[in-house]
Image (tube, rainbow, N blue to C red; front, side):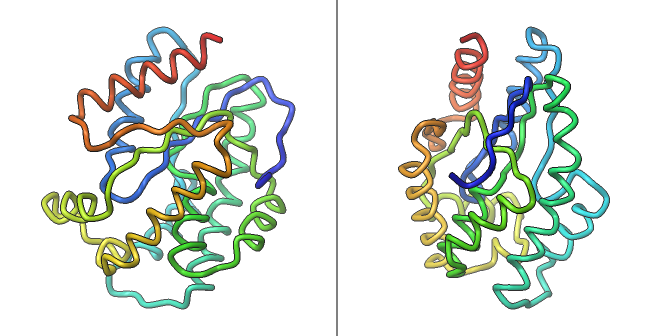
Length: 211
């Protein structure tokens, strides 16, 4: 198990997938729709959310910066340590937290893409006190399609610019995550229309929360 399961009243729902899969759009759309029924929905992103984490995010995605895989990895861990301090009080107060990426992304990107040992990732995320997601929505999309979407939308950050082989490794990482954490991962076909993806996202979350 990657992180400590805390006794909490809140719910943590994470949104995962390769770049270009549409998870961020689906998350915000679902939050808008479901907040009419569930009043305590808050949305955050990883890396990001806090001032420190947003500053680290800018470094990580800067197209003109080159860094070692270990530097990149520990920057993500540092940003997440700040994020965990931010979201924990919301969970303790019973909020429904929607989180755009979490440690599954580190497994896929820094683990499978860059070769950081998975045991390091699992242990480091445990050390910084990550809560385990109650539900993870994984938006499945072929890496070729994801890359093309980003190019067509003008998105070309440091990671977007990497080779197709790198993006394929990320995809393989998410396949591993889906099998390893199958008790909490629900897969959504991200090749569908945005409307269909949003509809499926809302349905899955609503069913989960109503249980």
